[in-house]
Image (cartoon, rainbow, N blue to C red; front, side, top):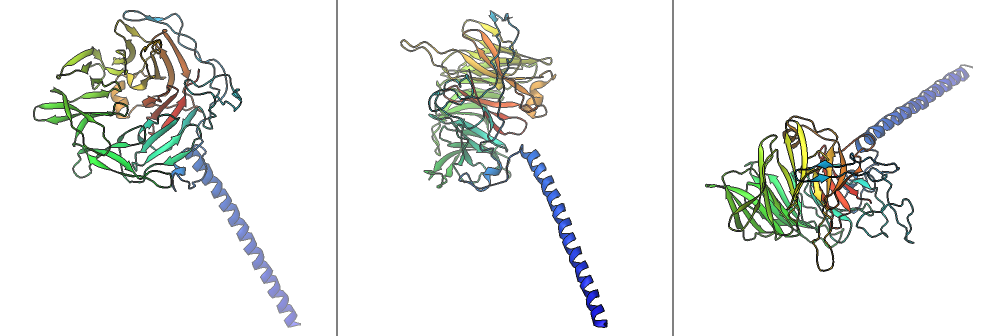
Length: 473
């Protein structure tokens, strides 16, 4: 009898322990599930909803910082209102406005050549291209040091700011591939050729010298065979710098005993070229433009309200004036034509102008020339007429800060921009993109356009990420 009683008591104890064990496991599972949901929600918030990290030929970690085929898909219709019709008077003429483009509907053309989504089309690209990426595509989640469009195909090369690695993004498929695997940390600025060959601008942490490295990519025949970057350092402390991949020209200013001297040299990847003196100056605060037609343009670094001047550097050290005494001058020249866009900033107000050989026009948008890019221009040749003079400008929603330029350049102020098309040939200006992305905006920095004139690229000044946007008719 006692043994039976002992057996029953032992059985009850074991059952109780088992129940407590199962209950503990169930409770732990609920806790882990809740924590996992919280972590997933946080990751989605930080990464705009992108998935977990994965490996690919772009690299073991790059899928975690690249957007792949993600981004912000823009859809819907409606009319985007343009500026007030009727024209705004210029210095020597007027500039009319017009209604904006209809909608943001993306264009996908099937193999039969018929549109499967929209009647709109992407300017300058063949109609048989099927884009898997959205019209507005954020390529990266981390800052880039510089970028450049490839030739012959909708693709873009860019250099990561943190590592210096050169990547290639296919704008049609959304595929990201790594081109180099040579670590160059803290690249603050990069200039890329149209095959991804880089020039890096970094700060030496020991001497604090500004270093410029002219790179060459070797052994990069396939995505599985990553290239390495070798090359040479140019002079230290090149205070102003520009490099043009089409004219293969490097343009820079350095300080010497007599003041500041501007030089050019051929852009020969990985090699030092023969430098040629362009001009000398008692001031070093210049911005440089090496154009693809071989012209060299300089303008004084802008300051709100301070008179600024711009010149073309001619043979023999002559500086030929282009713009005189414009307060807070920002400017943008175009290759193959004498036209320029320039902006002013004074007393908390921005203004934008277009200047040709015969007149200066006040444009009906308020922005800085740094947020504009010229569409590729072809002069008249034989029976072919010249193409239209067209620029695309990002226009801040609010640019009323008293010292806008100073705050914007320092990163103390960020804008929320919309995109506008300005056609100087027919006098039309129109908004082509509102800039609203799920209630958020972007601050356009370093805008560029591809050789076909159909795709815009820019960095978002808020976080340094790289974006592309297709231009639609």
